[in-house]
Length: 160
Image (cartoon, rainbow, N blue to C red; front, top):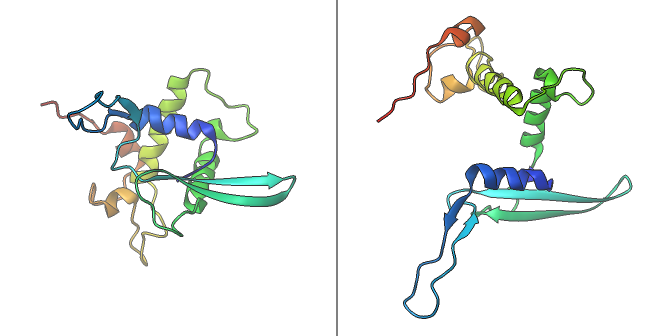
């Protein structure tokens, strides 16, 4: 779920897009290959139109998949964006910290993602005195990691 910012649509297609075509029925020209969203992806947009400071209308667009009526809401996405901006100086709106190269920004985002999921307990997942991270709730780990553990963890992809 995103807002109507065009860059998001392009980024989704670049990252998750795939070539596909309809099945050939045996007569006429074969269907053309098209690059688009995979069928398994549910992706929608909430597009808000404003006239000055006044909100004129809100449009809900299903870009891919099937999204039930009334399910559209960007509050979770906006909350996550705020958390990321507040945690990473490189993404703050007014800041002297910036990445000169996109590779540096990507690596910083990867580090934040790992820290957010393994090292940072979340109140919505925790109950009482037991601190729980998103990685713990998914069963990827059984404890809250320290930043030292995260940075010294030896990660190896299984190649088969």
